[in-house]
Image (cartoon, rainbow, N blue to C red; front, side):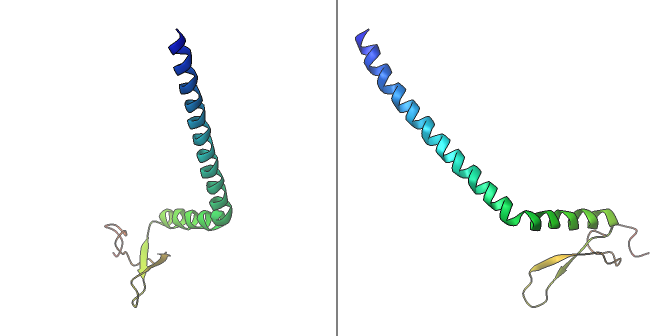
Length: 90
């Protein structure tokens, strides 16, 4: 019975310490997420708005810069493109 009290107390303290560390880590991650959403929230909302507008129009074509090959955005051209579908250039 004496050993149970001794080991139970030691393991209880280490569990409490581990739980406290996890709470601190989760709190830091939450603060980081809030900071990112605060900093980039308008840009992310604009990106989703442009994406849904382009998908709603029925014709989506990605434009690529010739010199660097970087993705520059979505245009609403009616030429068809990769996602234009079968009826796009009748």
